[in-house]
Image (cartoon, rainbow, N blue to C red; front, side):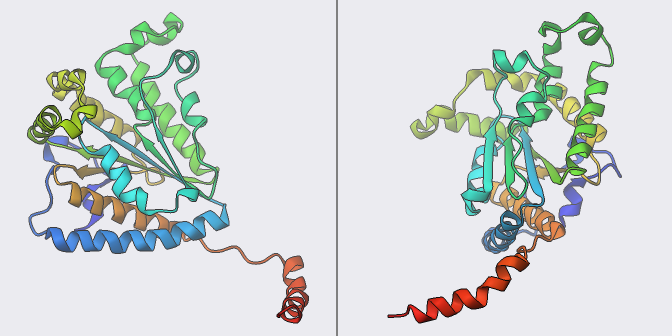
Length: 288
């Protein structure tokens, strides 16, 4: 189970029809869950070093169709980390204030400080996915030279790619994840939301109507990934029908990224280090 099989960094194109939505056949659930826990334990150690160093930040951007498991992934994977060094932001439909600014404005306001991990539950890619499928740009309060331009979305891919490179050059890593759920599994989860009282709060009839635009969303996801995947800000397309397997792959990605970042505890300031012997002596003298 090599996460490179799910990684897109510009060296190849993605075709969602060719990507799996289920766990690998050889994967044993019990073993995979144990590996996930072990991975997250290692991630917590690396996160502590990252937080202490404060020199590099990590952003995890999660995209998915409705009912693909974004919320549970955040809870089960990132819930194992130290909340002091973690920020989670969910991006809903933009507010009136947000629409009066450029589309990256609300994202810039939520960037984590270096040393922290920021998780975006939906992200800047909403502005080339749902907006494209529903042609929302036509209703934006922007000049005709912008919204009337046929290259509106190709230009946004360039803008997103440049923005992510800008962040990389200013001390941030970004990993982008698409939870790839099958149409049948999504249907089953929607039925659960209708039939199980404890899941009624998740129910949205409008979400179900989006199923009629499945092919349009496939095209939007593929274009977004193929135009913005880079070595510095890769995409991962993860099978989402089996949540235990999705969580394992996410833990592998997180561990691999943090390991590559190689955070270390910062050394003690020389001026402070010089004071340590005296401070220790004073502490020993005050022992009762």
